[in-house]
Length: 439
Image (cartoon, rainbow, N blue to C red):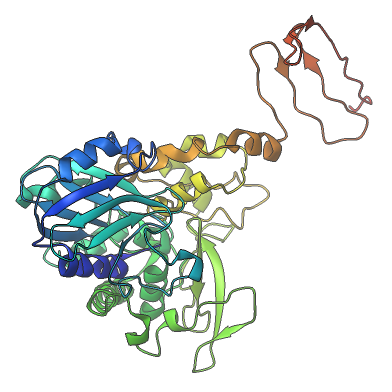
């Protein structure tokens, strides 16, 4: 998904192609998720943008906006697959396009802005997975960053160095007991760091992605802070052009998991581990564990279980009650933003200890609540959930009990009446469970 460097690229092309131009027409396609989750309609967006002049464009982390001649202004989030494409400029995209995605208007467009210049030029926001967000914010241009949801995000590593100081960063890290990778992805703490940027930061800082932030010593925190600022600066300065990244960057060699073993030019092997719900690339010979990590079943030797401490910090009790579910497009939206908030890998559980819980900072939950609400909107989500859990839940006419795993057990249906969808006939049934007696 687009991270701090990719969004800097997007804003660069907005300034090049739209800033200073008046929008003569705005075409929209209604989308109850991309627009609707933010409390607006496509028609409202169209009315707010048409005839106005674009006077500026800006960024905070993964958010970007168009400053209009008068409020409201357009605030957008790309999530995993959103982007701005241009009818006359195909260099704006940060990775090569597929042939089927070429042509105009582009596939999956949500709005198309047309300028009043001659010849007219068009810019379109596209989002194949419908995980992005389009908002209108009614405020003065100079307070956009102090308006929700931006005011709920952490400082931007490039724009807010006066806030994101070494001391501020160290205090934040020591106050948390989460895997350091999950800490970096939490947008309520730091804006703009995503999966690949987080991995690059940890590789340069020589810190294992699963190690708890509270176990890092002063030297490690100093190096982590330095690496954070450096990697984000380079990503933004190069506009996320991978060809301009230094050859020793992990980003240049991490791809291809599952195909063949990946190695750095110096010979070190690249491995992969899941941290905070995201696949993390790291180099074991460089990023060695110097303290307890999320995958360790036992505690850190101080008599306090890692699991128990995480349980006491957890604010996401619902997550441990929910059954496993398949990854749908909607659940990917949760993961995309919550790359952003999830903490803990849930791996390496002890047989005797309780399962680790996901640690979700309260501020993060409020920040991305709208983005996460689409979790149950996708078609088939409930069916998938029933399949993966082996349960159907309660219906209005009866209660369906879960099928037992052991042989000889059958589903017991407790209820007397159900509507026949075919011919409307009513019938009653009762299936008595037969099970071998086990004591």
